[in-house]
Amino acid sequence: MAYIVIIRKGCINMKKFLLLLSALLLTGCSVNYDLTITNKEKVKEKFYVYEANDKILESHGSINEYLNKYASLYSESMGSKGYTIKTKKGNPSSYFIVTKTYSNLDDYVLSNTFRTMFNSANVERNGGYTTVVTSRNAYIQSIKNDELVSENSKYDTFKISIKFYNEVIDTNANEVDKKNNIYTWHVSEENGDGFIYFKTGPKVMYKVVFMDYIADNLLAVIITSGTILLIAFTTLYLYAKSKKNNEV
Image 1 (tube, rainbow, N blue to C red):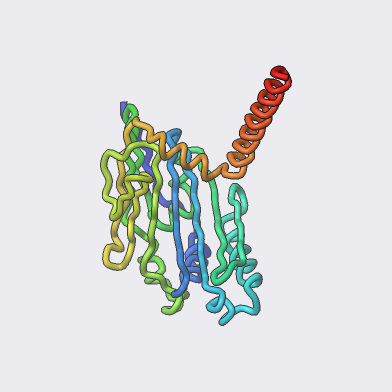
Image 2 (cartoon, rainbow, N blue to C red; image 1 turned 90 degrees about the horizontal axis):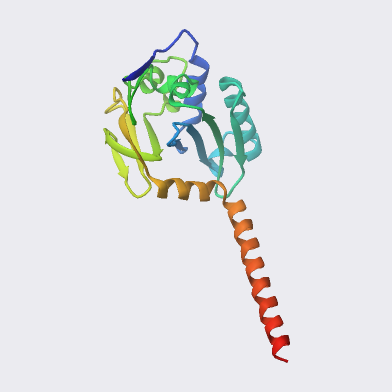
């Protein structure tokens, strides 16, 4: 029996968030919006903005001022609940990353981030298969028609990448990275009314799951591997030494 959830945009005011996004997505910024959808339908969201240091210093007194300003603005506009915001002063670019994990797809399509990009989504589950179809893209049109946003601050492209732990049966993605099971959509003025569609099956891509686990727990993996190697080396050393003493 199919289970369908249709989410529609509510009355919540998205103006503040739209203005923030437009301020961040300035020419020269490198913007990425990545999602991971696990085999348990948990959704991991990552939104990050890179900016060249020399570009930052054209309008801000210091790199830290820029990072703190936008991290604070993002936190205020989105609400702090469940969000992790990290900043990094680098060379030649600096960046801030916003991450959040949702327990399922239904929670994700109710989020401020999703509802800024799309007004609604249809999530259908049938057996081990899940189909998601969003409404037409709303972000570009909202920014384009907003008189409070200057022409220089308007951004006309947006890239959305989704990594799936399950096999993707069908999709309208613009790019496909089968090795890492990542699907990418490009939203621009040319296809500004575009939507996202994908259908996943019950087959779990365990190689992708394993590689993701390694990446997320790299330090723990290194420490554990080092400990195992140390124990193995010590055991072999003691065994060799004991054998040599017995021979004498």
